[in-house]
Length: 221
Image 1 (spheres, one colour):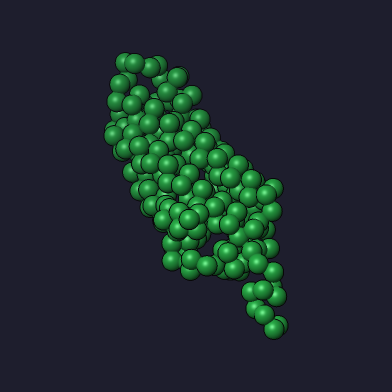
Image 2 (image 1 turned 30 degrees about the horizontal axis):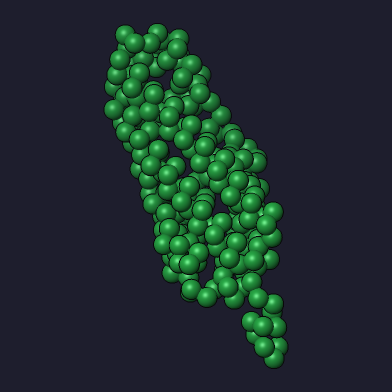
């Protein structure tokens, strides 16, 4: 039943990637964290609707990321992954979802404040802006790093996923912890699509077979 559930929610990875891209496109070109206040006020006055819409889309992306992480965890658990690795994948997914929700909340708030100049002063608007723009190009997501590393190691050990999917998760997870984390996050969207489709179309006996000893899976070898 767990395998059927993992297959049923596996496509959440595809939905997550689509909503993440749609949210980023709606927000559009975002000013750097050191943009002067004199330029921020007119920017938000002109683009607040798109930024607020992008924040809403990112909130939905976080929901589907949570479902996708749960599907990965279910597949690993059914495949006989070590409990520590399965728990690490679940915890990493939870942290990644929390980070996604935080970013979505910042953009939603900025979109709301940008439409109401009298509600907040320029200095406070700049502070919120820095929380949304600061470090985006230099840091990755620690939650995604833990999730990908756990999935990669457990996937290789149990064959819960195709080898190419498990092996590619390892460098993506490591890159999340480097200055290239932002770009690794973009590649992760493609990985999520591939993994989501693989979860949805994988054979029903795949995870159960991978948990058996090699002699039982392929007798006579």
